[in-house]
Structure formats: structure tokens, C-alpha cells
Image 1 (cartoon, one colour):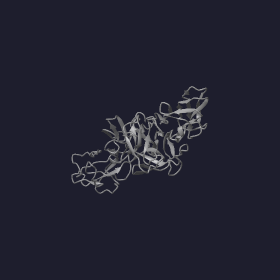
Image 2 (cartoon, rainbow, N blue to C red):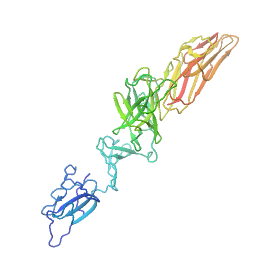
Image 3 (tube, helix red, strand yellow):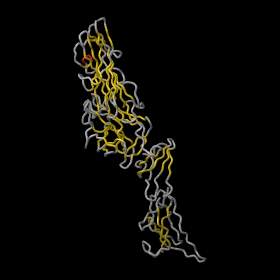
Image 4 (spheres, rainbow, N blue to C red):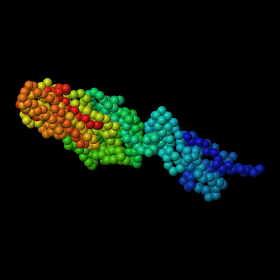
Length: 463
């Protein structure tokens, strides 16, 4: 707030005082000769003349309100030049409020971004400070602006020494970070509150922990079928906004690649966190945004279904199981269950194939960063009436080649021998989408059984 100017150097009179009629009162920026406005109203909308000419009684006829800056004030005779060459007195470095040592404090409820004007710190002036008394968060104004344009940075116990990682979680159900049931053909992805409500966003100089509420990413038919996209959060004029970046250059199972260079979703690290390495076009529904390099924080990856603009996450047993959302932070254990529901059938050929000849007896796993291992096992009940051997196996991006350890049933003689062999595979970290298929190899006289209790492929990883 502005305050009225009070004479910093009062003049004393003798018993026969002289009135300084028509004297000139000059206002300059401290330390120089650049004029600095004063105002006749507290809102500082009407500037006074500079100099202010005193009336015949030696007074200013107008109120004088100062800016929150340091002034040099000069009183000069009515006959002196501009600037004065023979001043009566000069007072340099006068402040209406000493903002060089005392910041402006503003209390409020909730984040000040988008609702409170503020001043960034500069030489001789400390920044505006805001205290969110509802959430006990301290903010500093880092970009001077109005209620809609000022940028505020949260100051917390964590970021005094380090910046917290993103604290949300990508999910297909609003308000539910970790879903427990199937979500089929979802058309929105939510960045839900999980570990907290802060996400660091780079502003070109530093990572700014930014408060957010749940963010909604609306999918669009421009999100192409069977395609991988990265998900980012950036600051749109101070408002945290979630978008997808460009499509991966390769989304084929087993060959995923982001690409590099202009118009790709290439990632880079800024102060340890992943951001967009190049300028990207972000999308949320019908809205698109041009985002300069490194200004969007990477939070995860999504895989579009066979229908554009849709995503599925399975929990239940079935065929062609998938989990179309992967989180870069705050990962949890994920699992998928797949298998053939046919009660029983016979496969008598000594060649590995997808179980019951169905390529849909698979799970599709998604990862945005090749950082963690996968674990798979497949078990199936097999019986035989003769001296025969049957195998089960796991195919990593293959319906004919076994990865890891296969398992077999070896029966002899007759009498209805049976067992449930278990194949296992531990897969090193891999990128993008990868298909994992339940495999079998048969022999004469074997019977294979289906259903979740007799034919079960399970995949476990984190995302």
C-alpha cells in the first residue's frame, strides 16, 4: 500500500520567518537525476507534476503519495533550474516503506497463483510474500504481475534443500490413484493426488514446486489407435495443465522408441527430473499448446487401444489383457491375468504355439522408462493316458519361441496321469509395449485344460 509523503527534512524559522512561496519540490530515483513520479491518490493512478510548486504559504496544494521505491528529494528556490543547481536541501534514498529489509506480507486461503497480485524481488526491494494459512504453505512472488499474471513459488520444508518429485498418479478413475477393477475404453486420464499436491515444473531457471488439484487429460480421436504417448504437466500462465506430447515414433510391441529431435517426444533430465527435450505440441482434448523445451514435466506414458482416443486397464482374467497407463513416479505393483477359457482340448503337435492356437492368450505390458524387471509365470493342467510329454512356456514378443524356463509333464504307462507344469520368465527392463504369450507344445494322447483355475498366465511389474 502507498503512504503519504512526509517532509524528511523540516525547515526551521527564525522569529521573522521567511515563507518559501513558489519553491519547487523535485522527486528523483535515489542516487541519480531520473525523475520518479509521485501521485495525488492512494491508488497511484493520478501522477503529480514534477516538480511540485509550493503555494504562497509554502505548502503543496495536492496530497503526495510515493511508490514503494527509493527517492531522492530536492527542495529548490522558485528561480532555480530543472534539475536544480542551487537547492535549499537534498535528501537522498528516502523510502515510503523500507522494502529493502521488510517484504510485503499477504495472508490468504489456498494458492495465490491466478488470484493475488505480487511483486518480484529486485535491487533494494524484497518480493511479496504470501502465507496460505489453510494449507500452511509459504509462497514467494517470482514474477511481478496482476492477480491473473503474477507467478508464485511455494516454499516448503522439502524444497529448501531439494525439490520433491511429482506427487500425483495417473489413473483412469477420478479420485482413485490405484484402480481395482476393469476400466475398458476409458476416454479420460486423471492425474490424481497421491503422495501430495505438488509437482515441480521448470521455469527456465529452476524447478518450481507447484500446487495442483486433480488434473483431467481428455483423450481425442487425434490420439491414434495402438499408439504410445507420453504425458506431461506444464504451467499455462501459472495454471498447472496436463497434456500428451507427440506420438512415439515406434509403438510396435517389442520395438518401442520415442525418437529424437524436433517434433518428437524425446526426454531429457533437468536437475534430475525428466522433461521434454525439444519444443512440443501438447494436447488435451481439442486444445493444443506450444511448449518450449524443458518446460513440461514428464509424469508417465499411455497406450491407446485399437480405437482412437480410448485406453483400457484390465484387472480380471481373460484374453488380450493390457494395462494402458504407466507412471514415472510413485509406482505400485501391477499385475495382469490371461488365459484360455475353453474347458478342455487336445494339441498333439511337438511345436510351440499360442495356447489353444489363440494369439489372444497374452498380456501386453507398458513401460515408459526401461528401469525395472518383469516377472511372468504360466501354468496349465495337462493329462495323458499314454507315455507322452507336454510342455508349457512363455513367449516374450513371440508366439513360437520360449523365453525363460519351460516346464513339462512326463507321463508313462496310462491310467490318467496329469499335472500342472509351471513355466517362468524374468525379463530385464524393456521399453514401450511388449506382448507376453502363453505357449504350449503337445503330444499324442494329451488333454489340455482351460479356465482361470487350470490355465493362467500372470505378469507382474511396477508402474
